[in-house]
Image 1 (cartoon, rainbow, N blue to C red):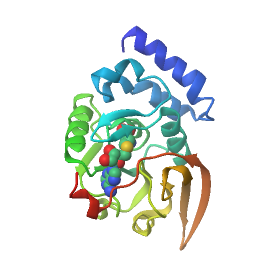
Image 2 (cartoon, rainbow, N blue to C red):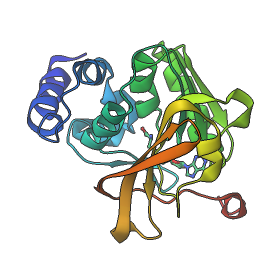
Image 3 (tube, helix red, strand yellow):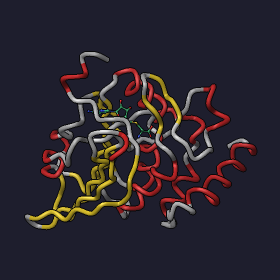
Image 4 (cartoon, rainbow, N blue to C red):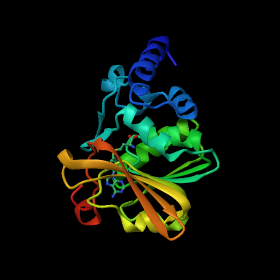
Length: 217
Ligand code: SAH
């Protein structure tokens, strides 16, 4: 990575990501290895190492890096897992996930974003990520069950279909809320036949697009 990007990335990690309580060594290493500037449009590359969401086209954004770190840390991945990533967007989070898990299935509802993320991930060598252009609001039954499911768009309530696609002891992390000013990031852990739900923190995500709306894209 060019020196100027490397320096900015180090400041982002030391002063913003660690400050947001991301201290898992594996997550921090994976975040150091993934070049965020390659996942944003050229015109935003100089802002790529600020701790902010940035536009990626089609009215969507690449998530704030400290929030990506926090969500990934919450999953406590060991490297052997099959993970479902809903809302591929730029592919940035999927790239980090690919370094923390064995296999990543990443679903994106907007075809242009899915195609460009797939191309980007292949060209950068993240070969264990499979990008699928589909509505992920009901998960991805064809490759279920998953050790972990991570959702990068806000759902109106905790989606039951996603809980059903988790393995026993699997974890789902999902922002839940009807409007941007009352979303909470939730961690749902499946244990035998029960589920344990924990509120992590208030967040702001774009809403999950449902099948009904997808015709308007
Ligand atoms: N993780 C992404 C951030 C994506 S923002 C990154 O690292 O860049 C959320 C993404 O979710 C958007 O790209 C949006 O198109 C997608 N999305 C919204 N509703 C969806 C749905 N029902 N199924 C799959 N993807 C969806």
